[in-house]
Image (cartoon, rainbow, N blue to C red):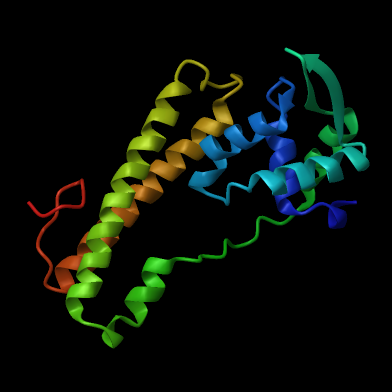
Length: 193
């Protein structure tokens, strides 16, 4: 069955394992708060496509109810969904991540433009990294107290810590490249000091 479910489907199954029933909109919100830091946060249409597929496979239960005069559908992972997710986690090789890094792609062919354009792009990237670090730091802090061994957010906390380390390393590499290109030393906000 795992061939019928894309990785995004398993990601959505994983988002439903925290013990609550979610609407498609709430799944999207949870994806935006978590997945966007290390995976692609799926579009709303993709969320609903995957929820339909997961429901058709019996991995998710959909329940409609009236809420303030409108029909709302909530989704919860089923026992079969738990089993499928567990099989995917246990049996799928780790795999090597595919790095699709537009900054590195643009830097690779930076000789095709003026050096100032590459420096500006790196400054912009440092600003984006600073904002991502701030956002992920807030997410990580929100997990404190529920991140110890045996706690519900132990594993999401490990991912947040990994992401913070990754973004910090990206910041170091971008600064090094900028210095190599004769750019000025930058502050943590990506601006010149």
